[in-house]
Length: 507
Image (cartoon, rainbow, N blue to C red):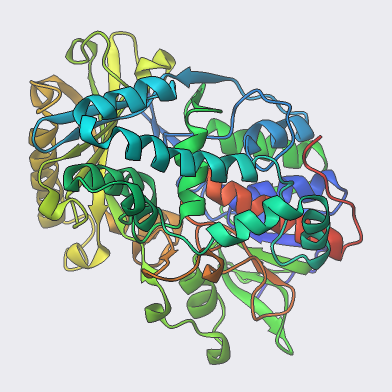
């Protein structure tokens, strides 16, 4: 077995956005970092891949946090981080976050202009006009509080004391709001069942839970920020974000090693001391950060049963079935929006495959496809158990994927008639693909809180293992690129203080 003792302060397992963010901010402070990634590319589910002249987003395509805004606060994370690193990333503003296509001929685009959006809702539900304004104002209040407070670790007593002393009223107000859910807050003001269903899909579109199960604080970040910072798409696709973070890491002397799969975390007397790779080599550090899911970290990378995490402790977020299409550009009509959510039946919107997420990013960035072509990216929730009985690469597996994709494409033709005949390239991915490429248990996107659980019950950056930290969608605040970015900022803040460094990413 090969062995290599490398003197480094921090090892990061995986190059997801949370891990890259933490590594970049720590490296900028002079805390040496080594990122180990199993693939040839960085970014995890926020990466890009190329096929036949097309550049596809592997997962995320709706991005917050890029507003050009100099005010202090928690939000606009990407703008502040890249400014801190001295790395530029060009973006294109999108005037519509999502265009919803719902049962009963209910269709509404969520405009950047909040007045236009709320006006569209009031036009559909005039009897709920007052409740609509009051509910969305609640979300704005959460956003305004968060945007006025400095980001940092909720486990850092010094940080919490500083925030509490500097902003006592806002700290108390935010603390009280952490006990509230988005759906229960909506029901204070709204009675119309169809409108409450819409608020459910507003939550489900990014949190993969209904509104009652979604913390109000999380909702306030996404559903208010879209009308302030807005939605901005990175030129070159989602992979531009991890590439920029990698540039920042390397600019300040950090190291990223690809095709370096971590198979175990080395423990000594209950303390994380390093990692072991698939080739048998070992790397040691003062601190280890895991970007893996909570189940992969404690039930696979760590074999000590004392730290095992029972899967029943949390709800498990689903995985995805994804369709990546290269199509003739004529299929996309003039004025078509970039992002869409389709619900055929409210009875199964939150069931596997019930809601279709759809994007055409080439409307914003034509460089992602050959001339005269567009990209169509569609995906639905799915579970690994639905596909595990197939042998990967078998004709049965391929046929099952093609049949499932054909059904989804037929449903998408509700808003893009003739799509099936315009396809020139098709790439399909099941939960097994997510599990294989991203090393995620069951292809899942991490733990979800059970209804009634407080957002602060989400795992934080520290873990039961000394000097082992966690980032990503298994940690507070949860799923989504902006959320995992916050987890990286929070983790870097905590570790920086551990190393005696002053942390301020707001510069």
